Figure (tube, rainbow, N blue to C red):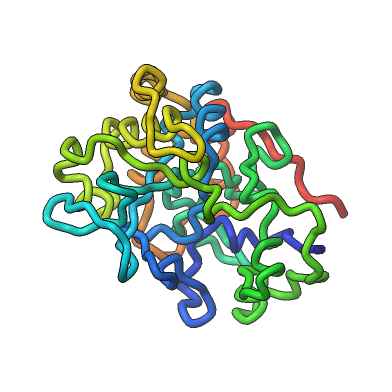
Length: 296
């Protein structure tokens, strides 16, 4: 597997606004998510815990699902959601605020939802190859290639973003996929107290989850036991407290970008120097790890 990622970030950015026919959808499977986030990368329980340990609990967000035809369900706010037994199932990923980015080979920055860890200027991940770098990101698009499924690289190519997938041979050392029989309690979690979730469905659908909402789910993920529906409540409570107390550069950047953003897909009304200064102010100067730039 060989990729050309420079100037792309197609798997980190929601670029549907200007190439809807080429872009994919997280809603294409049997269990579409309740939210409309594009390309959410599910984290493992241990990865979620590692983000909390680094004070980055405010960079995390849950995702719930509509049920497949024969799935067990739980009703939240009058909406049936996919469940395991009597517990709604969910995953945890990284938040995607609007940022001034020019992905997939385009030149003009637009306001597009992008991973909180994506540097808008270099289009590089700020935690790439670091201990926090998610397994899903590190192995992408290996599982797609293994299953002969379309990749984001190919979608970008179809949108005129240049050659991106240079070698389509999947790696020989791929870990198990995020979803499957082994995923329960490891990547797919079951929320233990569905009666506590009044109002959550609407807030997920309108991208207005509160810090307390996020803390509830992240805590349940960290407290989960692999292969089981059971949750360690002490561990869950401790993790929730960490999320509620988090005040990282990433969480602050989400708030600042959201407050400053134009409409989805709108051109950024800043010259390049002003945009770079704004990125430095909201991310680099606030404590974000730097990116190395692209080797020539």
